[in-house]
Image (tube, rainbow, N blue to C red):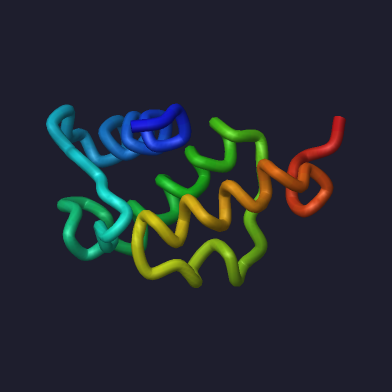
Length: 87
């Protein structure tokens, strides 16, 4: 598991209150207890804060699984001006 995977998993464990939660690239929000619409907002805001990025409305909801989220996040981290918060 790489650092990005570990950080996302830790955020999910904290936000969804499950210290044993294991996310894979194919994990879908509906498969995680507590990952409903309210949980999704909290989780995404936590991801934004942790990685110091900002998701567009489309990015906030368009991914279907954790792998999709990681791809959007990796793209943002590789291109800091495409959504990172500027100082």
